[in-house]
Length: 139
Image (tube, rainbow, N blue to C red; front, top):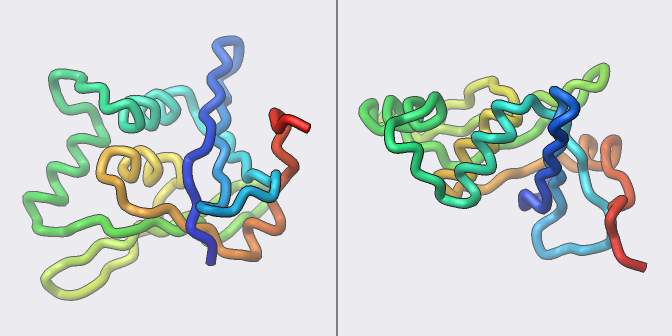
């Protein structure tokens, strides 16, 4: 399993599909993993990355508020599967009853991670299937 960082978020105003690029944390071999996401999720990730305060809680802020009220702490997310072009992920929560893994969309978990700072992981097999040479890398 590789710890990743959100390396780049590419917004395309002419398309409903946006792309977040993940790269292995501390490793810079020129490969990145593009994850296509929706515009709303891209905006939610961007707001978390840049610490933009919307004034009132948006959906991801609401989720974190609910988790906090229930004393469930998000500690990591793992993109654990790529099936027919769709990524799948698990959000690990620490609770009073012990760890709980919740099925989620990677984009939603990344929006939470951008707000709370917990790590993002990708299974090695998924990274090998999805990694591409960074299209914006300087030679």
